Image (cartoon, rainbow, N blue to C red; front, side, top):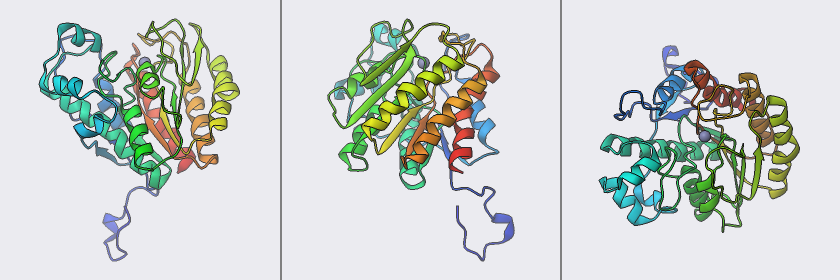
Length: 312
Ligand SMILES: [Zn+2]
């Protein structure tokens, strides 16, 4: 964003911080009328944060990068649309060329945000956090597991020695846990609804399953009393943060009753902790399906707003 000093005043950057976010919102895909996937929220979040920081078009993830954690046959079949009805049903979205393009952009936004995190301390993707994708199995609107791919790339390329994935979506990060289960340099931590989807849980490095009806106070106590100390003990040098908004009261697929203030406080605590530890952070959106669309958008925008407060 820095311009030569000779540039005319009118082109001076609008923002007095270096941060930006990535979004695949322009890459929409066809959905049947009334489908439960909240496609509206990506454009909603983009518009909401535009006054705060530049939002760039998310670049494409390359298939070879996805191949770091996913089965090549699986990737080839999804790329070509050679999938069964059962697979499509478990994924939860109908196959289309546009959906595939959008999927690779959403994951590419996370990778771009990782590069920002390495240079700026924090990078944000206004999508991603697709944690229900396994090596060869899609599920819960997740086809490509961006957090696992980023972890793998960061370790393999030497960008990090110890990666922590903090998954605060209300659903367990089952795909991420499985994909990183045998990687001692990665630590997966999930705070989720114990009785919510996925009903067959995987084993994260630390699972904190909470009851239905979990409130702000209960949630924040677990976050500060158990989750952050466990992360601290692992001594990561990169944090991948899935800042799910489906912990909010009124979410169609969540069973917690957090408030928007609770989400702000959660995000502030995580980001402040990371900043104070000198830990680069990548924030990803993950789930949010509130009946109140404005609340879904506000819940997702929170991590960007808090990120600018904490790192700006
Ligand atoms: Zn979720």
